[in-house]
Amino acid sequence: MSKQHKRIFFSVIEGKGGVGKSFIAQLLSSVAMGPEGLGNVRMIDSDVNNSSLAQIYEHTEFAGIRGSNDLKAIGTISMALKELGDDVIDAVVWDTAAGTEDIITARVLPSLAARAKKAKVNIVVARPITTSRFTQQSALAFAAWARPQGISTLFVRNLGQGRDAQYFADWDANTERNAFNPPIAEVILPDLGAWLSDEATALGLSIEDVALGRFDKLPERGLQIANDKFPPTVQLAVADWIELRRTEFEEAIDFAIATLSATPTTKSKARVE
Image (cartoon, rainbow, N blue to C red):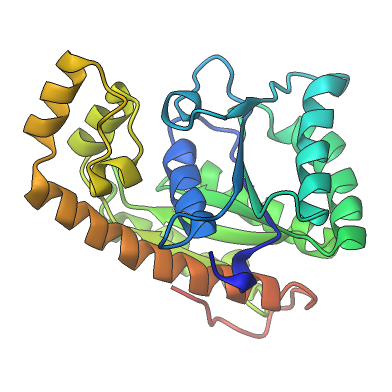
């Protein structure tokens, strides 16, 4: 794990379900662990009713936030940030649940931001961008709110599940998006193939597991399926895909953090893509 990507508290937030939050969390974990996979990354999952991270990452912590008084869950998240500031861990990746964004922005993120500032920890929130105008507007509203709070935003344009690039014309032309100066960091997430993601998730494998052929935790039947679906040729292709994404995410994260102190204006249309 590179030094500049230590002490970052990552989160993936979007009120709508089915936008790729857990998959993006996997990629952020890959960035935090680094090419050698040596980073000590704390995984937190707030989607306790539909969690895939717990199947993939053995030591995932649950923090089910359903209301502003879920103190144990909120405390779990705050403790992870404290340990990050104390260098007990290198990074945190927090995957949130659909329908909880209002609670998180009102109750959790402001106190996290205050603690992060004192501890010299960076908070980077990934916002999945789909072809839904509602999702796009939610992401833009969050970015405008987050920057003054000391929270970096990373737009992740999700081209998975048949979302062809041509369907993002509204997003590209969005005047509010183009008004941020400096712009909000953005990466484009190409489609890796729904069959691969579905099969890996069903087996409890991360995309890193697929790339490295780490199937030893699977029972015999699962091992047979993994070896059949993910032969060495597929493993190599996935490994190359991950390496490209890791580089793109690292550059965008650096940009997001570097531009945090600026105030949004309406002067520039530049961005990181």
